[in-house]
Image (cartoon, rainbow, N blue to C red; front, side, top):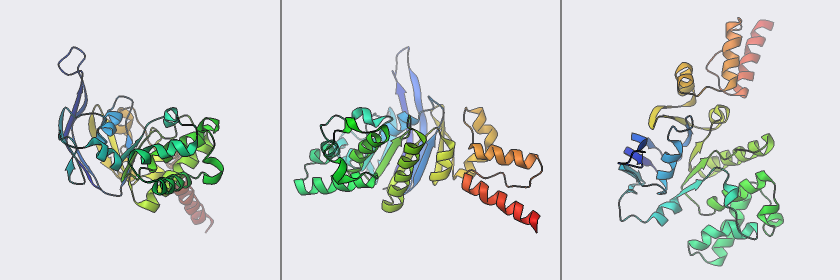
Length: 286
């Protein structure tokens, strides 16, 4: 499912003293099956942008064409759009409300009008996809779970709708390192297994570098940069100028280079850094 955005503009409080342009003539294409990292400082337009993709916000002007359908048209069924585009908000566990995990994850499929057998199949699959044991957890209250488990249940509720596009807004915010890594690994597995289009909003340059195919950088309501991680993160000074940075490992590689170790500087993950340093050390041994 491709997403084509044409000249998308969103103005809050238009024609009032509090008018603010959140998106300014944004145009870009997201291909089916891409894993996109969306980054930008607070107020750059990231959340406003993602909330347009499933119809939560209405464009002031411009078009959003999802799989050939312009969702900005007045007669479009937003219910159908939201079946195809799932949005997981920051701290989604705050939206849990049912008595059991099963009922919470089943809420979306029930509203799709599915029969009981299909609902159970979807709930079981979604719970297992986020790495939770279905039989052990389905009858428990979601409010008895750990923070990381609650987050997974909330994500499972969106996955149970079987969206073709999954948008995650800071899905690891507030989690401890272990829960954070588990959530990100599950998201990566979802992408690899189902080839669904995923848009990950994150402030962690390390996570973005490790996971995504392409990065979209937003600044003041515009797309400032887009490209593969290596293409985007080589613009270190520009990123710093708009309140962003590059992965910490990249700064380390630059420092090692400045100290005389001839390592590549365009490295953004710990694994690649380890391999590069080992390669240099083996050369010295020879």
